[in-house]
Length: 408
Image (cartoon, rainbow, N blue to C red):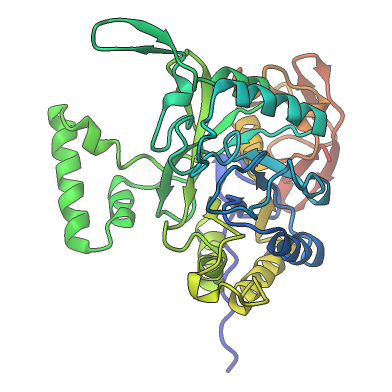
């Protein structure tokens, strides 16, 4: 007797008429790789394998400059501007690597120079990721980058020379990593409070204890710091910074220990990818593609075979229409656009509305490359509207009344 085929996962819906992700995908994965430790030789191997051979549509993260004396051969855009032309880079790993930089201390003037460099190179990132113990970080280990002023204990106010959040906004960045790693595989899907605690706790007894403390402290209105550790399962959140700016923050998935090219193969194992496709949701996977385990330093091959096999398995699931792949910015842009779509079934109208943070206006450029799958309206009668007037996407019909608005 032949084994029974596994049922295909059902698509999750934002409401009865809007698919969470474009047809036919049930989940979405983006790679968020910090460039720490990456040499140009290893960068070339990664580019050849991931972006050229497999053709995976990921974005990448860049150091504009690296002053790190412990990593003198670390890739940056200043010494290797050709990397920006080889594949897309949508994420800035702060203004550069100023860790272990000797007398080269970071100052706001460095950010101003970096912003001019980005404009010269045509680099337009949408995502910011804090780096290690960099004092100009926005959320991770330090928040000095987001405070315009410093106030001492006597009440004296000084300008903060590390403040650069206004320049981050000028660069076009609208999404910032919040500095945390979530153990939950699959954000952007409903998850009960118990399941959140169970995912965070390696032992059942610890999960039960934390869940009980959470519910008791919530009922009593205390323990806000403790409860903040166990966030909801949203893929992004609006955040107000000390200078008054409103931007979106996001978590990354994975573990601190597995965030390298060796751990990537385990994080992208077939079992985990199938779990993601089955449960649905989004995954912004945390890693360092250019970092390898210390015992492999000096080996001629950077990507281990088990990680390459997992990347091939990911590509196969993408081509089969199970897991959508993209850059981090494309995923987050899609989620924001999707969450602000208004569908009027009586008027047979689909309207795209600016959210005011990531998008101050919606036009053809903002929607380019995105696809939205709906039902409940005859696709031959639907009108697609933006704030400035009608939009003209291609409309692809599917089974059971579904159709996709394609802005590619």
